[in-house]
Length: 395
Image 1 (cartoon, rainbow, N blue to C red):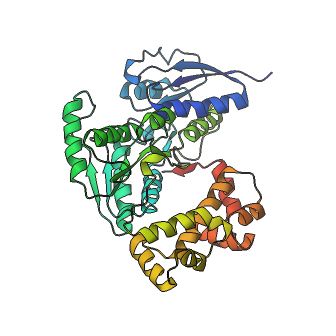
Image 2: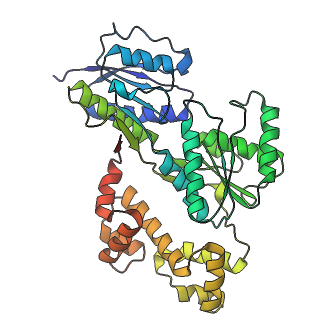
Image 3: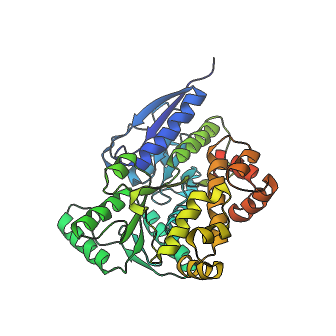
């Protein structure tokens, strides 16, 4: 018989990120089928942990965003793995592995999503700084850096309210900032909670979403995103993968094997597009029609000339107008859409590369492979292997 492992899970049940992490842990536990789980799931600061030094368990997975919990877990000397937003009270000197979502990659995904919609104005809405929410500042800096690479500026709001208990004061402050932004503007919020607040203030201030302000959040909280008005686009941060990999790390530790590193980052899974960013921020109606044609037909083999013919415009005229509005050529837009679709199929489907190439409008697998590697850094086969367990060591 295989030995049963007694594992404690310490997390904040009020936080979607933590809940998704635990879903990843649960998926791993079902697979190995040897874990007996003890759960502490209330708010972190309200948890009353037993004396871990006298608890006869085998391992711990804990959110290190609370100093008391981090200290108790570290002092227990039980094999442990910490997780969080990349900040908080993890002590690298403790040699406890720590795993978190890739905040920089999350921000770049959100920026790319809004850049693809033709925005020239950008903004980031985050939280006031603290020891645990440095992830908000990190996302804001990277978002601004990415749009800056395309030649655009980014406005930033953090406010002075750490919570919305003073809703009226927070609403008034956020409304002043939102109404001051140049329109139309593509806005990233630090997470879905902040994004929902932005949407609510936009409604109260009569700022139209997505036509004036397109909003994207982070974490893909299905209930929150669908209850928002309009429904909220969001980056799936990879929290389930954080949990799955944290569980795999703990299993390794409980077997007496040390990891090669002690800090790990997990990449996001992609953007889930909903109504809050369902807009094309260009004033030129013919360019908007061209974009719609391309996005609807790129994988079917549409060409630049096909687009010009459909719009009854000369190629030179449409190319000039398209480049001015979108910052890229018609052909570049066709390729971008084809590659985005190919990346999604490589990552999420079991289709062969030959099938994917045919479905995405490429002439051959070799043609797709060359372009794919140039865009995403690896050829499709290697990219698919990495996507099945995207887990990057740091530090």
